[in-house]
Length: 110
Image 1 (cartoon, rainbow, N blue to C red):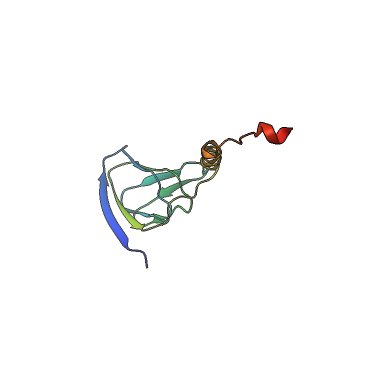
Image 2 (image 1 turned 90 degrees about the vertical axis):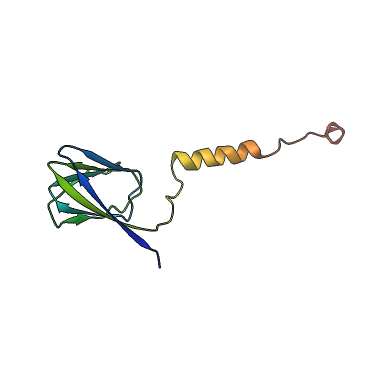
């Protein structure tokens, strides 16, 4: 079973907390109002004290404190983000570059 770690962070008014990949991380407001946004997700979430939000997609998450705030982050050990989109295209290109070039046998061509 994955191990969970918990962090408590105090935020000054109008300060940001950036989480590079928060998929599966429970974000809970312990004090103050938090505005949470996930890259690529058109929805924004506002958390009041005691409320929580857990992003389900891999991507950067920004937590903005509207006033003085305290945040609890409960992170579970998770699998790395799957390669997709441009990452998959770059991986395929890298594989193609590593393949040896076909050699032409001039004797076989006749």
